[in-house]
Figure 1 (tube, rainbow, N blue to C red):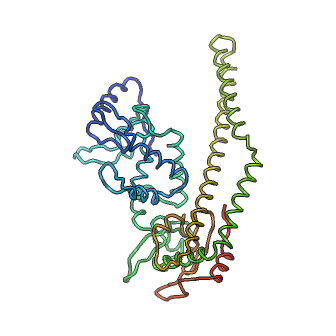
Figure 2 (figure 1 turned 135 degrees about the vertical axis):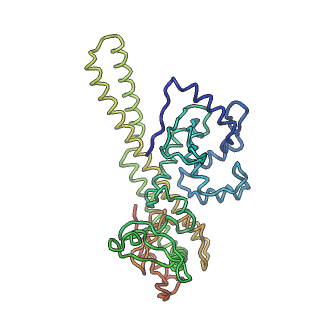
Figure 3 (figure 1 turned 90 degrees about the horizontal axis):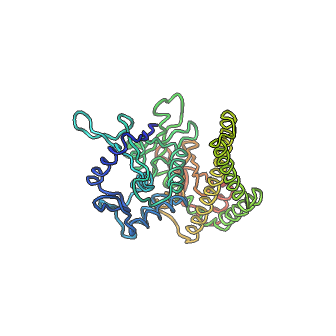
Length: 401
């Protein structure tokens, strides 16, 4: 991946002047205004920016965040409705932490504009203006989106294509692990394994019908509705118990201990630098001791980040399970595919065979369903109800976290 070039002092003034000229031409991002000289925070919009980052860190899907923004009557700076892609671009925008990256796009010799993917230098100007979110929040939100992208095996270059349909980027092959691609054939829509398309000898998984996957999702929702008390509530209780047990085993003060260790490490480095500045320590010994302290600090910081990621993941799972219970307690009978519910609760679909798929839910459960159509033949009834459905759900579900 191309790394932006960090400017030296010699060109800093030139880029700063370029920044002013650029800002006059380019519209400021949502949450900022241009006062003629600088980017200044628009507090009315900025509170929504902070909310978006907070929701992302809480594991709320971008689809749901966009829907809530639109339900509030809020619009983008261009007056358009909010979309998940708009939110992804916002969260990745360095300006929300006060930086400016120049030459994200460039003009070629034919005066055509292109996205800069390393063809020309990029320049990062840090602390250019007042930030709306902290660097920690910014990094954590982007890390979460990157993890979701990586888990779903989504290629950044094809991300725009993969987000066009409810199942885009959500179906993966249980054999080769490649994502499925949408195709319309013989009057119906099917999803094909991209691994099979590229090389049929390497993967014999072919395709599944879109309608069959939709029917399977509705069947699963109805089973969850009728199996809420038998499956979801006990599962939620077990998650909370495991979470509390994990806290006890790791020690409630472990986070404080790590921060204390990091603070002590910094103190040792300060003392070491002071001794060296007074000529009281040999240069070779100074370099050796400081290298050891830096290595120790990095190890502590890595452990802190790991603990934070574990806490975030556990909170994501609890929130997702609670949302699923709230959905099930509405006691609705689902007879039509609901795109919003699919986006809210399903992380991805794993195709085990042409007549069998597994829904990997955001709450950590994995639920297997038989497909209702194979090559146009209906194999089973779509809607399962009552205790039978709950029993099937109980025997097929398993915890994956």
